[in-house]
Length: 91
Image 1 (cartoon, rainbow, N blue to C red):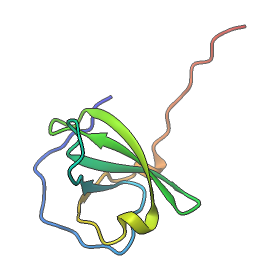
Image 2: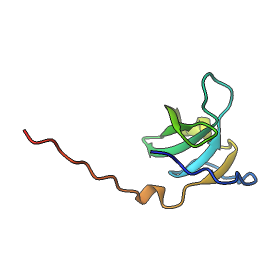
Image 3: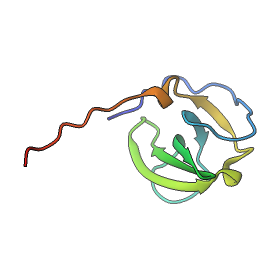
Image 4: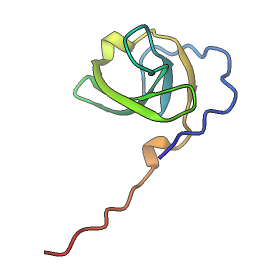
C-alpha cells in the first residue's frame, strides 16, 4: 500500500488530531517524515509513519494530548470510512 502525497499544502491548524490528519514528524530516527492518524481510541492516537514518497515505513502510538496543537499539514479525505476486506484462509 502507498499513500499518494501530492503537493504538501500550507499548515492547517486544529486543536486535536482526528483520523485522516497528516502531521509533520519531529526528529526521531529513520525515514519517517509525516504521521497519518489511522485511529483514535481511549485518548490514544495510532499513527502510520510515511516517508517523503508516501510509503508506510513505521507505526507509533501517542497520547492525543501529545499531538494536540502539532502542525497538521493535510488530511486523507474519507480515511475513517476506508474499508479493507480480509480474505480468510480456509481451515
